[in-house]
Image (cartoon, rainbow, N blue to C red; front, side, top):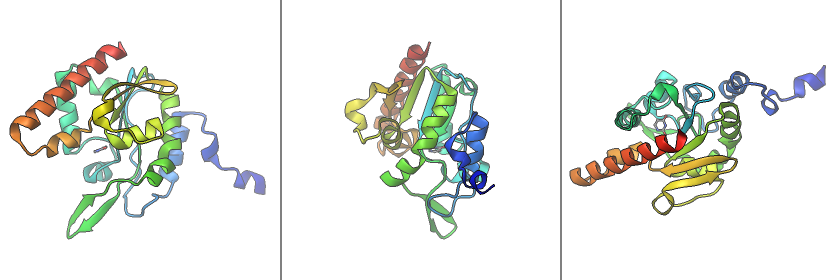
Length: 203
Ligand code: URA
């Protein structure tokens, strides 16, 4: 009947698969992305990492954190003895937003409105995954999880993202952009130290 057709399946997904189907069916808020990039990892994972949005390579491959920032995250996780295949990894925004410059697609930061638009999916996703600890990687993830902007530098460390225990740290792409070599190494070591705390808190 008409009612059934009107009923929006997005409103009441019964499983992570059903939720993911609604994300895949959704139009990107900003046109351009190839596909929605879903979260990845086991349900019941002790730790869920939340990034900003898929980048160029994630958009092509359809998997989160496989580009340069993801490779750095993998390396830092390995150093902190966190097995990537045992954690859940996702993004606040599920579609890549970019500006085309010649052949290159240059990442553009999502607006607050875009983060709000995708927030419903993120929260539902975490309800299905039920991690013991939710990690915000950078400012966009903090905005999505806390529901308001908080400066990373002053809030780095443990933080509640109701109803979850949370932790705020930097985004791995920030570590790639620190211009000075020594400062970049220090920033990386601080990030690995955060990951060690994250592992301990999740145990
Ligand atoms: N940056 C993110 O925030 N997420 C990804 O998946 C890749 C890069």
